[in-house]
Amino acid sequence: MRAVTQLLRVLIVSAVIGAGVMSVAPGLDRVAPAGAVETGAGVPVMGPIRLNATQLANWFRATGRRPALPVTIDEFASYYVEEGLKEGVRGDIAFAQSILETGYLGFVGSIVKPENFNYAGMGACDSCNSGRQFLSARVGVRAQIQHLKNFADPTSRAATLANPPVVEWYGRRSTGALDPVLAVYNYDHFFAKGTAPTWNLMGGPGKWASAPSYGTEVLKLYNRMLTFNGLNGGCPPDRLGFGVDEARDCPLSIRQAGRSVAPGAGGYYVLNGNGSVRTVGSAPSYGSPSFGWDIARDIAATPDGQGYVVLDGFGGVHLFGSAATGPLRSVRGPYFGFDIARSIVLTADGAGYYVLDGWGGIHRAGSAQQISGRGPYWPGWDIARSLAVSLDGKGAVLLDGFGGVWTFGTAARLRFSYFGFDVARDIVITPNGDGFAVLEAFGGIHRSGPVPVAHDIGYATFDRWRGLTLRNGGYTAVRNDGYSAS
Image (cartoon, rainbow, N blue to C red; front, side):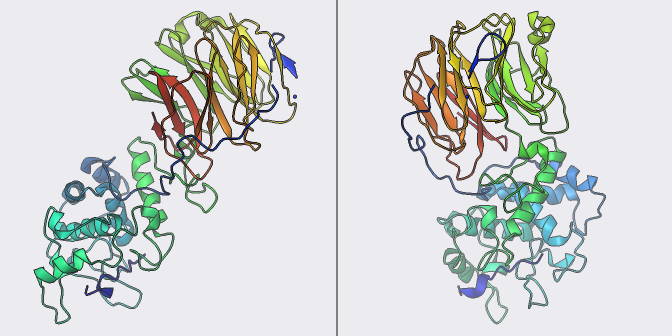
């Protein structure tokens, strides 16, 4: 794909807890998402890198390609990291852009040639017979980074660059003469300044490339680099993956990287749809299942903070750390044989648990006690979303997808946000059951009773947010691409 960077356009239902199942009338009000702020769609051009030069170079070597470069692939990758850091641009993604533009640094069939030291198709277009020439590989990378910053940052100015604007790009007069003064003027007066703060906006009229899907193609390559290096990929936050409405090119490890979240000692755990458990902060890892497909549904930490359990959709409970060595190892819960298990809650003594199925049934195992009250049961309708139980095991709340909160036992009966469509995703309860908070798919946290104030976690315009937990006097939530916020 050739870039069309036209710089010189300017001279510039009912069941009971007990016999295996449990289950309040729909809510009273509908409330706008708490602290709803549109964070914008896409992956930012500016910001910190996730991959260092060694990781970038190792990925490229693993492709088996031979780069047409005047320097080693390690040195070339270091240019992107170093120049990117100087300008606050994500150089690791810019490296992925160069891979796309140059055909994996082979330049086969490209208007731009290796000797141009031009790694982003700068100056190349459908009607052109060449691209811009730069003095060296580093200068070519620098020009790319500076131009990315100009597209992304509306406040970018030549005076605040780490190096003067690359004169071969910004300062070439019609005569071919290079003018540093003109380079400063053109950089400061760039016609598209600040119009593409995300990679998703880098394609289209007046952008880096004419193809609207340009940024998507760059991010596909970047995701391969991330997953090669053992990291979660970065699906755009405005949709599930890289298709218009689907995740055809977004692998499982990215597509369901955030199924659930649970607190841990010094941090917390994020559960992936394939069963892998990622630690955040200093939370210790005790291992994880590996299913190879999207079937993990919930994670719960043991009361002693030294283990956790993972619930799969068939009802299997997988034990790790103290969960595997303590009383839970002899507990046998329900097994459904199809994907219907949705939520798990461990008892305070660590010797039992409750499992919620998607029809609203609540199943007890081990030391889990019956909680008084009756609630809904929707046979054949997978609409129950989450269960939370008070610390003493005498109160519980069940959340359905429409936002209905069904209370049992001593749990306080409070007003709540009823959405009227399937958008509620998780619920947490205070230790004594006098309050709860609901997470909806767009990122709003809706509170009832004496629960912590909810801070903005990043509002999304698509169904993205999945898991919520109370931790350190506040909330931690996880999105289905693995991004978490507190």
